[in-house]
Image 1 (cartoon, rainbow, N blue to C red):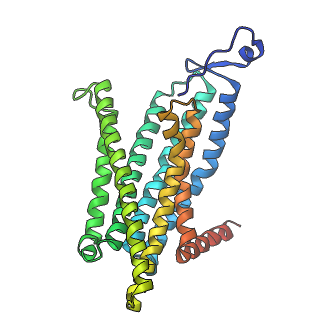
Image 2: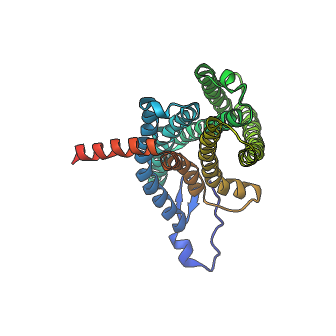
Image 3: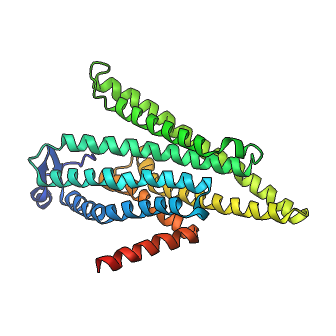
Amino acid sequence: MTNLSAPSPGNISQAITNVTMDGEVLSVPLKVTYIITIIFNSITCPVTVALNLLVTMAVKRRPRLQSYANILLACLAVTDALTGLLVQPTYIIWKILQKLGGINTEIIYNLHILFLVAVTLSSALHLMLVTCERLMAIKYTFVYPYLVTTINIKVAVTVFWVLSLCCTIIRRPFVKQLFNDAMGEKIGNVIIIIIMISCIVFIVTSYAILYKETAHQQNRIKTQQLLQEEVERFFKEKKALKTTIYVVGAVLLCFSPGAVSTIFDIPYSASWIITIVMLNSLLNPLVYCWRQREMRRFVFQISSRAVAAID
């Protein structure tokens, strides 16, 4: 939580408008921020859940969408749906209780941070997995059929979820006999930082390699007489690559304010930073629908039927 500086003795009007809540001094702008973020998350929460579940259903029901790239995006959509099911509701309840004042918000705050860390870390690992699949498909085409299989995807997703949950639990340990709170939090934070940095380095390096590889393939298409089947496969893989690039861009867009504020020690409202991070889970399914016509048709067709049923 951001600490706000106390008003100067001469500014009486500011001093009058300040209130005490949970031991903190909250100014009117901060109270307004709480209200706005509560309303914003209350609106986006059900939309986030619905869109990501529809994306998952589209990949499951439409054979044309059941490529390995889309299966991994569906796994990422499940993670994003959990943001709307767990992270945003606990945030809303926490902020409402904090706004009311006089209520112990420690339990709901701990739950919110628990869900936020687990889902964010899992999303980063899934994004690395999506990038790895694109790297295999375009750069290492010969080993792609052997390494990227349904079984391997299930194993990788399961391992990443277990890793995310273990890191989150270590960071806020429930078994105090193993670690004290301070030690557990330090160990958990170090592990999480290492994982996040590794994900970033891997993703950046992979896209640098993919950029060079796609440029090389395009030059081959222009200068050599390649089989039509090979050309079509390349453009299909390139289209899927662009989708993952937009997804990564959405993640960077949503995470950049918090990263910049942390690195340069710029004062910020934690409520807005958390809200922008959670907004990424809403942007991802919109990117999928924008980039894939078949998925867009399925999602909006089901949505139209649901609206008609309600009417």
